[in-house]
Length: 363
Image (cartoon, rainbow, N blue to C red; front, side, top):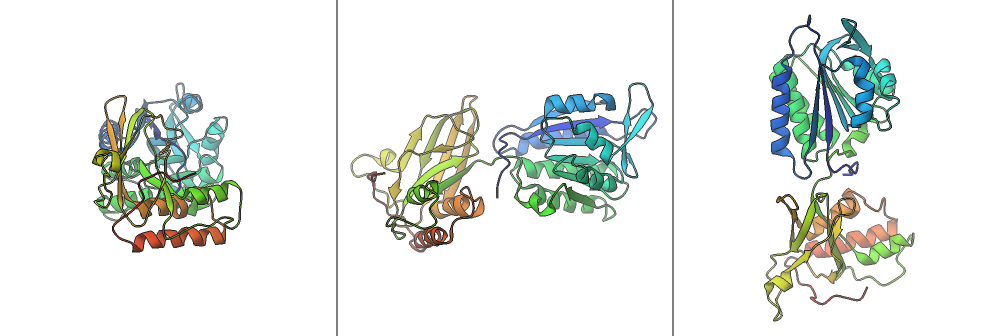
């Protein structure tokens, strides 16, 4: 799973309910969303900005200033258009191409637009096709307020906890079907390829990652196959974390594996490392790396300048698989290097009960 590189998801919530239209229960939806996001964010706080009764003529300027990752509309919808208020006119109908045109001058377009409006599926399709955002969500029928709130609350809960756009959408749709009694569906439209939503996260989750320093050297030199001897049954492994809070103050890595002995230096010295370093693009890495003979559990905890703690746990091999095979930090590996990586991970998995040399090996 890859991330968009965003550490804090920013949502711009635009509500627009003309006086003569039926009420949308916007205040209740906003309150539920705010409470939900505060409970469910795992890493950086979610930025949730509300713009009530924003007139359509100020929309482009506000989006350009805010640069949201998600642009959310809570409004009435007609076939293929949103019904938005105007400072001088009663209402204005804005369809997909017109909305894309309004947003075209923004230096950063939203990654996702959510049209929480009746019968907005047609508009979502045209908006995505016109390049208004990478992904657009709409519905295919008139929608009850309770169902609308349930869908978007679940969607943002999932996204805040680092689910991909596609994963979050599937869970939100399931909730929509339950609340609406199966009467309403939602659709996810993409500017390019719908399957791309499977691999896009709007929050960079806090997690442990690991790599083989020898393999990193090969890849840094653009090698297609190993040029030095590598022992997959006793590989050197370097650990790090990704998705660290910007306000990180101190990071502690540690293992509880009983095979790691203190050798006279105490368990704290043998099993833990303390780092006082600011993250670079959310990453913090141990400077040292060691040879490992088998699987073991690893843990990381980060304290922040505002007094919070973020923690994660991972098997060593899970951290390696995450780095090389799932998230593919180094891209698709050359075949011969890929084989070495998989063989080394296989050895570690097969050797339960980690044993590793305590001294740092030469770089």
